[in-house]
Image (tube, rainbow, N blue to C red; front, side):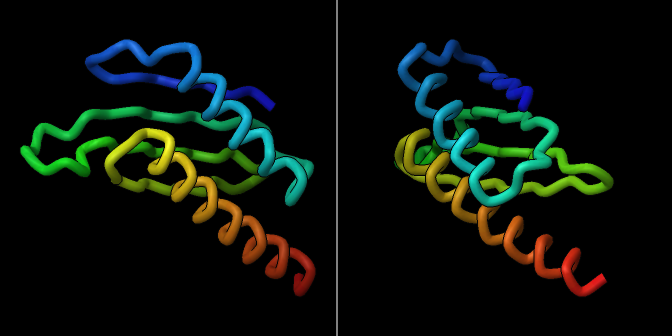
Length: 99
């Protein structure tokens, strides 16, 4: 699986990049045919403490799944996004079985 991580207007440290890679790779245990993932890390300009935004686009054969979450840390946003994608994968697999 090919994972591309884009940090917008800041440089992400290696620890964060490794954390994101590990979390996304865990999605492979739910669905083997994941082609790749594109991750966007963004700092929201608001004064709110919950200004860390993570967007993940997951590429599947003939389909694309997307999750966007915002929280206090990039790690928490990544966890929430990966969990949302896991639920979407399970729903996608259910649809494939019915077809």
